[in-house]
Length: 618
Image (cartoon, rainbow, N blue to C red; front, side, top):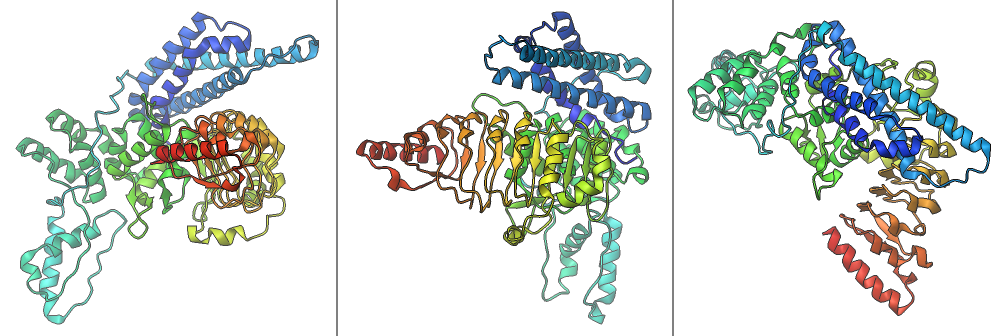
């Protein structure tokens, strides 16, 4: 059953991403040189909307119907394919240049490729239409998509209130303490799986005033329990008690449902949770807690996608909020931006929403990072199915399958030879993500290690095999092949802590690139001259990378929001005036080599640019 529940996690909302691309079909026609035709476009739009209406129903029915699971597999794979094709079309449209057509051969080659793309688009349209027609044979019904704000909860902490369903355990533990107090008992072990409520039970006993009178010295650690959220309604309280009973004494399950219901005071809404068919889902077969799946099921579609994406990380991984947000951006998982919003702001809001619903928990001794409970990680892995693969997690090896679109690894040197034969199956891989398994404080030690032999060949294999990559990260690499410039879909490139001393100019062909991370590249002193062509770049991380000057015309990067420092050059096209174009910087910026500002006019401009930049960064 592992990997059975897939599809709905990403299809709810992902279909809209593809649908929105077809709103710009005229741009596609300009590139392809052939009208796709209003009939074909209308058929696709209708099929996408109809398929999306079926996803919520299929998301539940797949639990017991293998054919529905396979239908979701096929639909999700088709939507991925459609998105990749359309991304190719619109990237080509955005970067198209007027080329002389006096020679026959280039024109012929271009038309051949365009015709092939048209054929592929038509093929995927027919596939989605045919899948939508299967609804009757599968017994799928249309369920309107919920408003994404209807289940949104405030990000305040839960209030300590009564804990239900653990009365017998409390009585037994209190009796044990009463009976053994005279024998100076020092330790009582409360054991159980993670999330079962060991700390909560201890807290309840600690708060027993009569018992605590017998102890001269005491201390306790607080663990939030199921809140009193019935708002004084006896009917809601009754339903709440029944829901808690279904949680089988698991506080994590009760708390996540509490976060879901705390803003709902309608008996019908609470009853839907109580009577959900998901409660009948077999825990034995899947190891998934029904209450946690219900909490997931009622998330907005974009939060479902963000949550499942975390299955790429091993259990116990400490998440950096801002790093994860950049990846969500690159994978197009976030909700659409409203006027004035940035994708980073939306991503942080999504993370906070998931944290408020207990899908993330802040690390106690390291407040800057977050962890996911093991039971929630199990749920994410279960939902991810064959579409996500985390290689070598805690010594366990996952299998790469044809449906795999997202892959994480720990060592490229070991990954490529070991999985060379199976990795070829993942023709449409979108994610090739290195997961750092070392504590962050040891990363500086890692950077001192020599480059691994054969890493360049391994990197070349990755770049040549996977043309649809959106996210790519390497480690311990000494040369980045020129092939990088062919990854036109790439949004996120992380080369941090590598031994690279030069970046190829072909990197500047990556029109869609949003994030370029070059942290601690100690051998890198220059960026490519064509950096100004990365017009969609938003995040450039060059912390502790010793750049000697900035490339020319950096001011053309209008969407750049994060830049650690700016090195003032001696030429006009890399001087202080280039800061004037970076009007969207929102974070602290260090300005180096101000001595290169020589003329009085430049000095005045420098003062203005610095003040302007600082105001934006406040």
